[in-house]
Image (cartoon, rainbow, N blue to C red):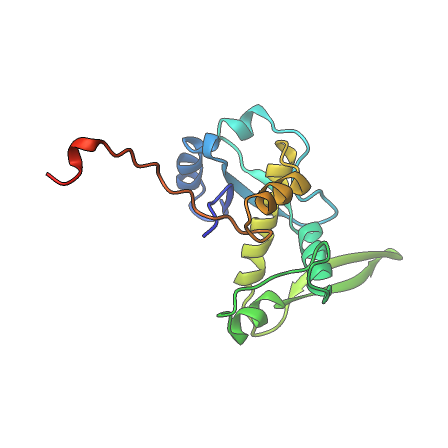
Length: 180
């Protein structure tokens, strides 16, 4: 099982409770976030003091994240960069939610405006969760995580890429416990 390296919590509902929860967990990389439509970066380049103190959410560029995720879902070649892996127990409703939004282009004053819209009658929580998971990854990268180095480290430990073997605690045995 992989350890949780970072997590994003949507602060759109019960904002102050989310801020209070995340404020004391910033050092554990637990971030209060809010989605922001339009052409914005997935994760901000620099934090503000209000982000770090937990007074404001980190703004996540959801349209950019969804475009990246949908592009990666089209990559059918396992082992290539950007290929998406899923647990074997995922059922059809999960994938329907993952594909629950479509890119729509409308025009305003002759200019194209691209936005993601939910499909009628289809939930999209799986896509939202994947967007915030991707935002958490981008947060780690902004803090200095180098994905290639991390993959090499896992490979050197003998674990498949993206998987870590659990480290067992060392047990010290003394002679006084043996055969008494």
